[in-house]
Image (cartoon, rainbow, N blue to C red):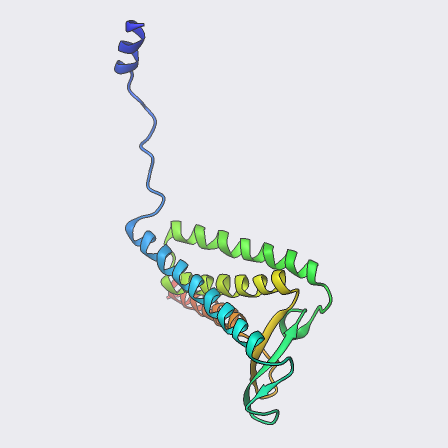
Length: 180
């Protein structure tokens, strides 16, 4: 038995030192990204809850004719009310998309892409989670922001749109830097 102890003590471990998954900057970036996601989800849930509890379906404040109004609407489809009546399929597709965005964010944190790219994915993830939670809990998404003749939307939709726009901008800037 003592021979085995000596052998174990004299054996050197030739395996490489485990490397850190995230640097200090990567950890800060992950906290910022998580903070953006949480902020969007909480803001989206609170605003939708407020609308559901303080307004009647179809009600508009200040009025039907105003360019900007808060108008309570339910949407069981996706953007621009497409694919209405397919809630379970939409939940499945949206769940997959949320997981894909989360996976991409994790990979980006390891490779330390730009802060703008991280923010873009965090906005998209927060928006995706916000609308997915509504769809799972209520079978429909609560929309309430009405601007002109544009379809009624919510905080999650805004985050998704801004996130997609920001990602496109980051890609264009990155490509321009590569070409320069």
